[in-house]
Every structure is written in structure tokens, then in C-alpha cells.
Image 1: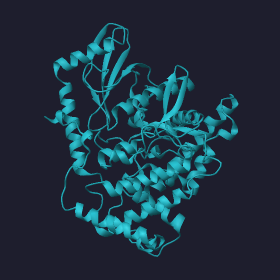
Image 2: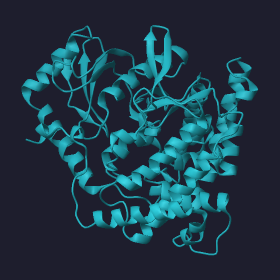
Image 3: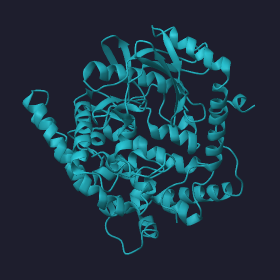
Image 4: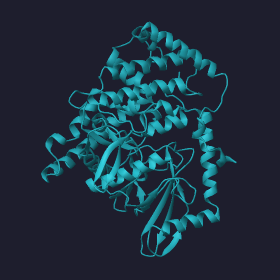
Length: 476
């Protein structure tokens, strides 16, 4: 049986086709000229060059160089990749300005932004920002030499300890600053005026975008746009509900057999039971305050100069106030690669990760000591202790499973099942057969209905995106 849940390949192909068609339109001469003129309306100076666009996973950016030595970029969310473009742009602008005002983390300065209706170019919502000059990103430095851009990055196993401490230490300082930003609810920030922000929108996560894009989850199954959460337990329960909804609604490639479906269903139901019982959060942290959390904060979004000093942190679109358990889990990106994609499996990732974690915690403690000596941090605000505890207890895997719908199955059966439900005599693939007795009669009956639906759905392969997911005009 597969461990990870696969993406819906039919949806993925459509997503890629829409992105490619849209990007192709950007290279028309009249489009490029209009983009250049639009940047000049919001950034003073004599322009020198409009550089070729750069495309990331969710955005396309154009850089305009100026005679004064500075640059500005305009960035557009890519249709087909970004399922909530205006919400994403608005969230990113508000959180960038909040971080800029409350920390010393180097983030881009926002010159101007607007909605689709405010964009005369007809290219959707946008942000115009000052460009942060840099040599490379942190992933470039840490990645295994010889790996191509198309390859998934993996931390260079021969990286020098001094270099690793230098880079980990700077990143640790960023996480430490973010951890001091405390908010009363779980959700996305909305700027009210120049000095006031409120948690007033749902937490728009990386996972939510991918559930809609590659998991074909109907939008009505998501939290409402203005829905926030007063407790960590209620948010964990909502995430567990989304895992189950994902399994039920993904049209293609969700399961490969009846038993595979039962295995995935039981895992999600047991995880939801634990969430509803409040097993994933402590009473002391359940009601907040909550920490700023960025789903996409990783080395490829951290810019460095020729001296290996961090000069910028970019791509804050999937950032929101989250349970403190998220921030207390040590960062997954220490090896660059996510555990579910590690070539030799989850346990092999864990073994390599443990040694790198100790290096990271050592430099984090040093950062904490400096901040305490300077009066910027209190001893009880240290991150190193809860991070070590999260790893030792296995809570790291709870938060990872809660945030990662497509990785959920691998994490649940490898890292969570035995912890919460006891040892098993079966192999990992067959352990679900022992856990079926934990379901009620009604739950088992519902499971069989889900199995029947999934097996019927496997007979044909159709696109299951909702109508407003796709701008079909782009493909014509």
C-alpha cells in the first residue's frame, strides 16, 4: 500500500496547464510594456531594465532595475496554482507590515498592492515591493552539491559544522523573534490602521490551498473566510475534520483498493477522536495567546549575501496565528527535504534529523542567551526547551500530521498509532485491522459507504474542481 496520499493527477495536470498558458501570455511585448509602466507609477526613479520574469510555486515576479542602484518587483499569484489569490495577497501584505513594525526581521518593503479589480493590467491581484539585493537563497548554500534545480533539495551531508552553525544560528534568531509575537485568536491578521491589527480572518494555510488544488476539496468544506478560533483544541479538531473530508472528496488517486481506503479512513477517524478529546494541546496553552506561524518559512525563502548573512525573508502569504504547539515543534526544514519525501523513508529521515537538531538547538540556546542578556527575551520565553520536549515526546509528529494532509497517513501509522493506541502485532500495512474495533457500529457502517463510493469513483477519471476554481478562458 502507498504511505503518502497521492495528488489528484487529473487536477494537477489542469493546474499546470492553466499556469503554463497564463505565463505564456506574460511574454507578449504589450504585456511587458504595461507591466513596466505600472511599476513606474509606484516606484520613483529612472528605469534601466525590466528583467525576465521569475516563477515560483505560487507566484510570478518581474524585477525593474533603476539608475539609483535599487530595484522593485511586481508579483502576481499564478492562476491554477493559487486557489485564493486575493485572500493570499491581502494576508501577505498585512503580515509583512506587522512583522516590519514589531521585529527586526528583514522583510520586503511594500510600495503598493491591489486586488484584481484595482489592477489595470488584467493580471489579477498584485504586490509591488522593493527588491532585496542578494546573492542566493539559504537552500542554495545548504543543498547537496551537484543537485539540479529540478531535483528535490537535501542537506549536504558533508556541510561544515561552522557553516551550519552560522546559518542555523541566524535562522534561529528569526524564529525566536516570531515566537514573541502573541495574538489572542487563531487566524490571519487584518490591518485596521497604521498601528492596529486584528485576527479577523481564517488561517489560510499552505495545506488548504493544496487541498483545493490537488485534493479537489470543495471550498464549502473549509472554514468560512471570517472564521477564527478561540482555542487550539478547536483548531486541531478542524484540521482533523479536513483530513477526513479530503479522503471523502478527492476524486482521483486517493486510494488504490478497498483495504487502502479503510486504512486511511480509520487513521483519520482515530486522529479526529484524539483531537476532540483535547489530546494535542495542554490546558495551559489551549486558550492562547497564540504564535505567529508561517507554513512556508524555509531556507529557499531566506536570502543571503556573499558573506552568508541573511538579508531578507520573503514569501509570507501562508502566515497566521496558530497554536503554540506549531512554534514549539522544531523546524522540519533542517534537512531541507520533508520527511515524507526522504528517499529512504520516514525512519531514516528521523535518524539523520536528530543529529542536525542538536546542532540547531545549540545555536538557538546561544541566540536565546544573547537576547536575554540584552533584555529582549525572558527565560520563560526560550524556544529550545519546548522544541526539545516536542521532539522527545513525539508532539512534533502530531503537529506535522495535523498540518499535512497528503503526508498524514505515513506519519500517523509510523509515529502516532503506537503512541496513542498501544503496540501492535501486525505490520504497519495491516495495523488498521486491529484498530477497527475502536470504531463504533455507525462509524464502521459509514466507512463502508465511503469505501463503496471511492471504488466506484476509481472506474473513471474526471476533473472535479469546482467551476470557480478554473478560469477556462486562459486555456483558449
